[in-house]
Amino acid sequence: MPSILKPASPHDSLTTPVDHDMPPAAHNRDGAPSSERRRMMLKAAAAGGAGLFAVRTIAAQAPAASSGQPVSAAPQPPFSPGDNASTAEVVVQTLLAWNVDHVFGMVGDGINPLIEALRRHRDTIRFIGVRHEEAAAFMASGWAKATGRLGVCLATTGPGAVHLMNGLYDAHFDGAPVLAITGLTFHDLVGTRFQQGVDTPALMQDVALYNTTVTGPRHALVVTDIACRSALGARGVAHLAISKDIQAMRLADDKASMENHGLRTSTAWRQPASAPADAQLRAAADAINAGSRVAILAGQGALGASEELEQIATRLNAPVAKALLGRSVIPDDSPFSTGGIGHLGTVPSEEAMHRCDTVLILGSTMPWVDSYPKPGTARGVQVDIKAERIGLRYPVEVCLVGDTKETLRALLPLLHQKDDTFLREIQAQVTQWNALLDQVASSERTPIRPQRVIRAISDTLAADAIVCLDCGANTHFAARFLTLRREQQLVATGMLATMAPGLPFAIAAQLANPGRQVVAIVGDGGLAMLMAELSTAVMNRLPIKIIVMRNDMLAEVVFEQKELGNPPYGCELGGIDFAQVAAACGAVGTSCHNPQQLQVAIASTLASPGTVLLEVHVDPAEPITTPDKLKA
Image (cartoon, rainbow, N blue to C red):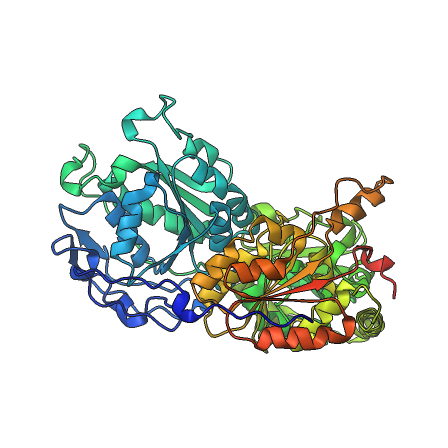
């Protein structure tokens, strides 16, 4: 392997200056605002000038980032703006009241007042500047997926807002709570074909479940709360569009309408945790108890119910197949786990679904219909927080609309203990499958098989590592050969299945979890799209590790073209030396071609400080297969 390049010195990274009108910033070791500073966030001096806000209450200390959106039960309203408070100040102060401490975005003249408000509050809310707005939206989505908390992204008027769309659709499709704030042209020039006059609310109409244009600071006091609550409560994207002159409008200049008698909304928050009615639970229990071969399909909607899922699986002796975004719901080495499911899955998962007489679907709309039981061969019970997703992929007969954790808690006492005959049969298949995976991953042929890379990463990860995936051939190999253990976590793009989010996801996950190892597994096609964000990681001193599986090919598309009987066309990529790109961005960059050196290279990468990229040259001819076609 080439010698490791010298990493950028921490002293080369930019540090935030302190204004004479701001108190000294208090940050934790990753630069995020500290809890003490958060408790002081509503003091008038920290609001960017005396008299802008009068303090009514102090926010409670937020729990760890990975525990979900913090509960808020403080007296309301959380702050009272002064006459000089601008729309931008009101928006930022409201974000603080919702425990937002990171905003991802890119500056631009269409949002200068918002950027200034963030600058003045930079000791309580951290602005992460990016090289492309698409990455900002991915980071907001990745933040939400990794933490359960509200992710926020910010983009300027026109093209900046357009660039957000792919990342916002990722959040929309995967139910990640994200608030997007965008600029608009001057309020009295909207609709005049003025420069950058994109109709941003219309642009966001499909992707956003809450979407409005802010008319001034009084309006911002109300709709910013609604946007945050909508994104968190309905698990999706909310959008606020604000004209650049409206952002600077002062409260004293914003006359209330005749029916706005001082309207204020609330920042109080508690995660909904409803369970279905007793009659529905009994109907579900009757269907499950009547079966002798019960299988469970768990998705990301079950991620907060791991303990309850394991109790249910134990009671039913049921194998558990896991959709990609739900892979960490129980560890892969659990006696109940059959691994992934669908085109990225395993033969044991397929067998469990096709041989069961009852299927329990928990928080999943896994898209591969052929991986469900055939309609009519198994009774179905489905649990989902959203009623419209019940029966979307399989004709279930019992619908349980509610929180997965609370529903399983209520269901467990009604279920009968089952014997382990079916489970043992599936476990035997798991043993055979794992032996095949071991045989594939142990191959030392050259070029390196990508499966061997994933296995080497998996064997070297920290016990509580967060793994972030891109989309492409690398996803297939990672989904099948990555063994996720109990405290490990996976962040990936699900229903949108878009290329490029692996690196932005890793940046967001590391910012949210500064004490944990974060590893991005990406392909060369996806990384090339947003690789400038390597400089974002370096500038923010993030110790993320990026493993690039380089084959100079869009390998998944090659597979798809061949499946159609077509010869590969348009799939070759011009070679990029990603190790040199990493070095140019100030990170450590190195590469590996030899399978005998692979384990050492990965171990060295994961053990090194700072932002580190390892480029592994893998076999472009390695086929992407469905589970039944995997060969040693």
